[in-house]
Amino acid sequence: MSNEVMTTVRARSPLAEAWDMFVRNHAAVAALIVLFLITIGAVAGPYLYPTDPFDMVWSPFSPPGEHGFLLGTDYLGRDLLAMIINGARVSLLIGLAAAMVSIFIGVTIGAVAGFYRGWVEEVLMRTTEFFQVLPTLLFSMVLVALFGASLAMITFAIGVVSWTAVARITRAEFLRIRELEFVIASRASGAGNAKLMFTVILPNAMPPIIVQSALMVGTAILFEAGLSFLGLTDPNVVSWGQIIGSNRQYILDASYTVTFPGLAIFITVLCISLIGDGLNDALNPKLRQR
Amino acid sequence: MRVLQSLLIRIFYAVVLLTAVLILNFSLMYLAPGDVADTISQSMGGADKEVLDQIRADYGLDQPFPVQLGRYVGRILHFDLGYSFFYNDPVTKLILERLPATLLLVFTAQILALVVGVVLGVISARQPNGIASHFVTMLALFGYSAPVFWTGILLLIVFSLKIPWFPVAGMQDVTIEGGFVVHALDVLRHLVLPAITLASIFLALYSRLARATMLETLGSDYVRTAKAKGLAERHVVYKHALKNALSPVVTLAGLQFSAVVSGAVLVEAVFSWPGLGTLAFQSIIARDTPTILGILFFSALVVIVGNLLTDLVLRMIDPRLRGRGA
Image (cartoon, rainbow over all chains, first blue to last red; front, top):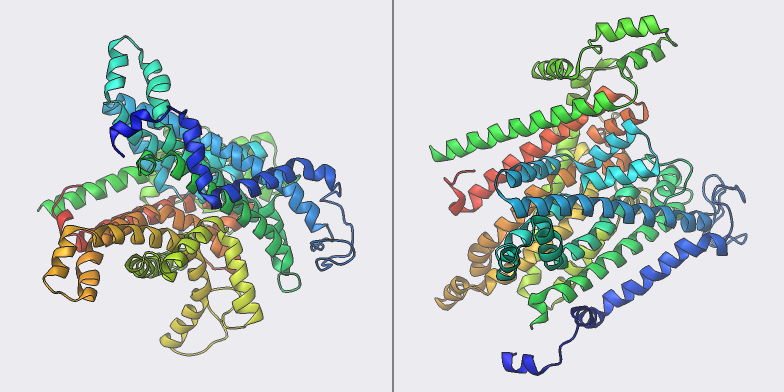
């Protein structure tokens, strides 16, 4: 498209433009709808389907669809549907909160490293490499094991090990943008470092960070599922990974007790990664110019 | 000379990283509630404050942080990672017994994922809109979205319980008698499902990148030249293009080592594979802090060695990197 044509097009907000691109990706839109439904289920589900997930409601291993239990009962005779509905809360909440922790750490470290350069960058990037060497799951297992398996600790343990990718992306964007003319211009007109970092550079660095953040939520959900599968979870709440972990000895008798919660994780994370793809299409300026 | 120099720099850097892991380890142990004295007194059925203080003095726990840290690092230099009061064994012995199983699983899964991933990537790059290409896209989505322990359990249900092709758990059948070959084949049979499970996550990642880089190289000038001078299509794809498309994939694989070790923890738990992951899981339940921290140290070591090996492989496939420092 030539510049001449571009200037005649009425200026639209970047957000509206991005949304147009996003809507063109049908898989992403479908995923957004499904994820919306899952979120509603997690928020309102326990009120609409008030069975206590810890209650023994029937004999163990009642197959799906029988005795009025849509997904059957687990090895303790608990209603699997109620467990999955209640588990959605923990999985989504921890996924979201842990992703936010890691994005906060990653953006801060990446921004400072990319903005100040020099020895600050050296120290911060070596720290990032150090965290990349630690096997993430093992490290968070150690944190949860040593400092207790509260929901807050689990969130922190996931967030503190998974920020490295965000930090690298943020740093790369800051390195690129800090040399651009508009940044030099606002520096010349007297903008301080903090203002330059957070109101001038950061907004322009957001697109790849947003895409990565969306994927982070998915990774964090998988992470939480892994920890709770291993039993490293708050025993007072149900989560998807924990249902699988506690039922996995009985897969010979009742494989559905593992299949259904696993499907819940799979579908949720699949939706998030499809949305991530859609966001990538919508926010990647290279694609938009085509 | 320059190769040697860059190798030395890398090894020095690896030592620095490992020292940092040690300091982190020790700080965690220092900060965590409860210490060795508590563990010992528990195993004695409780002790009063005087005895606890005596134990703390015996183990040097009453010393200031830097002194304790120095002693800890000193012990590690003598390959002493402490003593597990749960297993009644030195931690180093416990870990070395289980390390080979984890190494076997991790490296088999990595190589499997790399080989199959690259093959799938090449096939789908040659026909960007073919069935293989769609398959790679689907696989990438599944690999990213399915929790690895769930994939493992599903494979276990299908290929071990419903169709009894592979064993349910463990690394070898102790009842089998025979020579080395028989035992090796037995381990191999146990390895199939865990390795496929672990590889499934990374297979997706590698095939997607291999596809992208292959598409890029196939469109480049030198490939067109090679085709124009009359070389066979196969020759161009596998000898010219693949060689260049390979290094980004191997680089990515190197960066994934810590994720592979993490995945191995879950896969080991599913298949009762007797490696570090299973040991970590058991010692976390038993609150066996020295063992847990020893495993964290050794798994970081595995990652660092994996990175060094990746670097060597990269130098082998990419002549441009040879002789370049760091």
